[in-house]
Image (tube, rainbow over all chains, first blue to last red):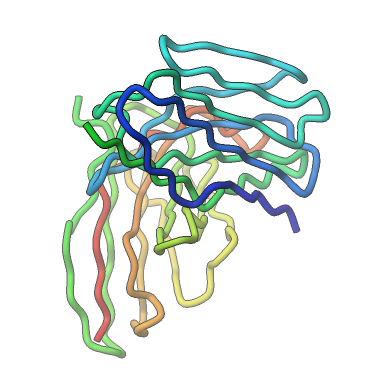
Length: 110
Length: 116
């Protein structure tokens, strides 16, 4: 079945440094979503990407969807302490099956 | 608007006991979902309901049952709890009708279940 792998599992950065998390699917995706979960909280939707090669920006966050629609990335420029949390990708296949990656836990040192 | 509300927030059970997790949404969403979250494994879909009166198995349905009571409410039942069901459970809803494009998921605050 469809699998979604996400790396790295953990990332610790100094405030102001950049951060990137990567998501790879074993099958071609119809769309991919990204969520953020603060410690002790619930996942909150960030964005959905649908088109091959799509790039979307939200302030310091840049989301990319690969040309083959099998991979995606989230890049945060100049991290802040408010960026702390776990970032999940969720890939939906053409069989309608949506699978979450295991997440990347980001910690930011002030 | 409260969004997605789930109860209880915490529960401790003994092996073999049963319990029901309740979930309600006030956004008039068609689809509702139950996920479990375990360390290092992300969120895994247990069951979902694409519309009132329908339910379908997700990735990890064994040991669980669900009921879509009406458009607002979707409950998850553990008939005979096992330690392997210790987890954080999240209910979610989306506007999607059918599974073709789930769209944005709105999550509840979670229910932390411990089975001894």
